[in-house]
Image 1 (cartoon, rainbow, N blue to C red):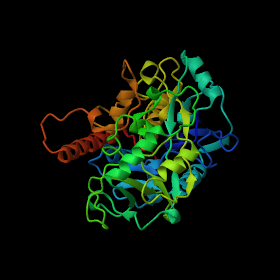
Image 2 (cartoon, helix red, strand yellow; image 1 turned 180 degrees about the vertical axis):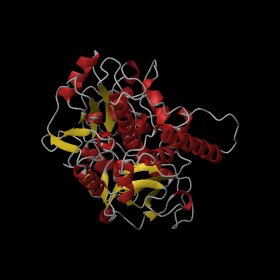
Image 3 (cartoon, rainbow, N blue to C red; image 1 turned 45 degrees about the horizontal axis):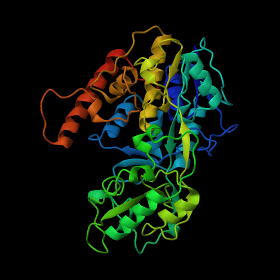
Image 4 (cartoon, rainbow, N blue to C red; image 1 turned 120 degrees about the horizontal axis):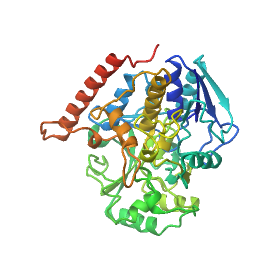
Amino acid sequence: MKVRIVGGGLAGCEAAWQLARRGHEVELWEMKPEKYTPAHSNPDLGELVCSNSLKSNELTSASGLLKQEMRLFGSLIIATADAVRVPAGSALAVDRDAFARTLTERVKSEPRITVLAGEVERLDPEIPTIVATGPLTSDALADHIAELLGLERLYFYDAEAPIVSAESLNMDVVFAASRYGKGEDYLNCPMNREEYEAFWHALVEAKTAPVHGFEDKKVFEACMPVETLAKRGPRTLAFGPLRPVGLIDPKTERRPYATVQLRKENLEGTLYNIVGFQTRLTYGEQKRVFGMIPGLEDAEFVRYGVMHRNTYLPAPDHLNARFQTVKLPNLFFAGQITGVEGYVESAASGLMAAIHMDRYLKALAPVDFGPRTMLGALSRHIGTPAVNYQPMNANFGILEPLPERIRGKKEKYGVLAKRSLAELERLIEGMQLRPAD
């Protein structure tokens, strides 16, 4: 049976791949290159617009566990990221352009997937459809979804970090290191107390670009503008994205008061992302204020940070834990539009929506991933009623607790991960959930 998927981002591509490998003919609609959002510029599928990092690969991290769970299902997104990764310590970071290009090639080479360019403004509830239009859903489609589900609106706001050129950095100040010696894949801009306090004062007083309808309460914690975070208090940044723990400046042999980290944007190491510096400052203020960071005095900004409107559903009111609308059973949602937060989580929701749709269309028993797996815990977050529904990253706090008490956090997370993977393997084998090769 033919399935329509709207949106060629991480969730849409993963869903298309999983359904095709399960025998379905798939139409994958992507409005690029006919139409772009304010945050997109690459015509390829799967463009990464906020960061080039898919977070930690370690099993003792929630993101690392989620990625390993997805590998058990032959995840296209994780396999592509593994193929084009750039050095980033224990994190899975990628060359953005290579990632999008490789993903597009793999999707278009799958014979059961037809990629169609053009904006989808309305949905046909009679056609099995997965909406994976992401946090930048077009106004026309967002309005139609709101109309179908009886909603007034569905949006919030998000911000991106600037990117600077490597050749413009002052390497007499900047040093290469990762926290606690886990590789030397980050560049670090050290600050003493006076430099930090001067920077903080300039940041909280800097001019921001107007964003129509913006309210701080609509900003997700995971992508909060750095200037908004700074306004919570003078030390907030020093204990947050600028925390110096685990870092020693080789020039002084001391730990800095605060440290701004730069992460590779491409494999060649010619571009760097200012980690944690999503912002809505005006371009002129970004140049002035971020230029106060030691090592960035003459930085060339190849992309300034921007803020844009994002879209998501109050999922528990309209979706079940299978990412399926209660009112319109042919209609599924996946990605950040459901309220999962993060690249890996978005791709994971596409994987789960595809598995659930496959079984729905074949009249097979529904799958319950269970509260002990990260995939299952995220599903339950989507489908569980909540008074104040908020987007969710993968985290160990949403898993079913262990029956025994384990003191060390890392040891505890290791046990949770081992339990999760074992349970998922049993589920996969019992219900034959792996896709065909």
